[in-house]
Length: 83
Image (tube, rainbow, N blue to C red; front, side):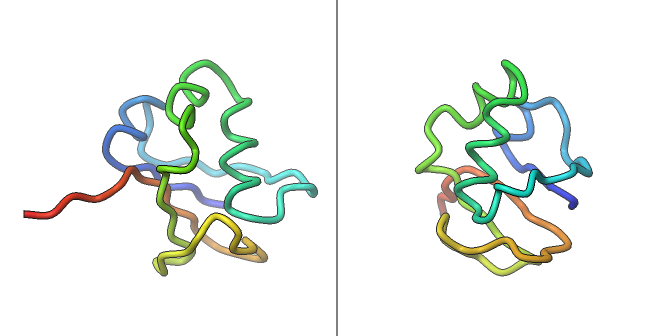
């Protein structure tokens, strides 16, 4: 599965995108964020407050309880501000 990171999530992790194998027990966006937080210090820092992370599956915004199913791409990013 392709993951894409934006803004300070990308800066914290140190990469804009990556391909990962998702463990079988990762079923939702929330599960994915919790899993990512275990992959190292930079991930733990990026996802230390998981409830503020926004997500999109195949470019559609979703909530954390959304099933990831057979998503091709999941984007993770901080809250958006406008102006």
